[in-house]
Length: 261
Ligand SMILES: [Zn+2]
Image (tube, rainbow, N blue to C red; front, side, top):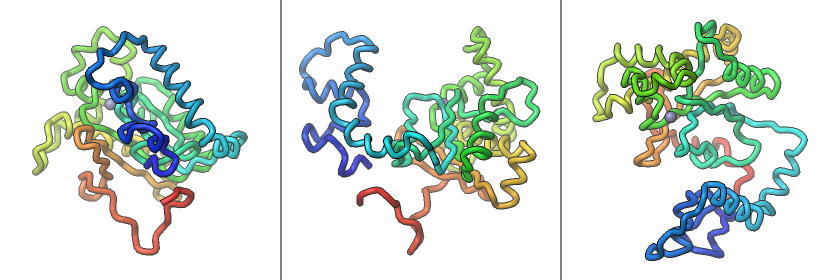
């Protein structure tokens, strides 16, 4: 996806702007050299320097165009997990995604007993102010939040804020416990991670105004699932309640406008 603007042409073919810092250091220093102790902030600053030196000039025209108004196509709700990088898995750029990230990609349901307005505020602003017509909930495998739910929350019981937040996943856990294992060989955790996406889409529909928009065909809800081990992204087939490969582009369908082939 880095395509023509990748800086990799001037360096190692293994280096991309989206590679983890540690990966780049290995490539640049060679595997045989001991990695020097570098603080996290030094890594951050090195990344910013690289951005300033190589990427900023490339995105400057795009950001300058967007500087005073954003028109994202999409509200993307996903987990805080560092391995989930929304712009990579959707090949999107500045201005494309309005993103809400939280522990477990949870959407507190309408009238939830544990108050939280952060997700609702994002959804309201996205739909009512920005005019966004599609909301995606994107889950992922090996989600720590889902693992904590599956384990009954004991390991995080001393973390009061997190424990309160994870109550918003109770419906996902209940749905998981009431479900039958699928035909695949997915682990219980993977199954919960996927069921959680379905449940959070239902939680979005629990808001009467939002449900009305969906039923009127004015708003589309999408479920995505990133499998970390394979790096594959699948989309929810809501009727079958399974995640399937994203369909091929329809003949004569929408082009990926604005991106060099
Ligand atoms: Zn997660």
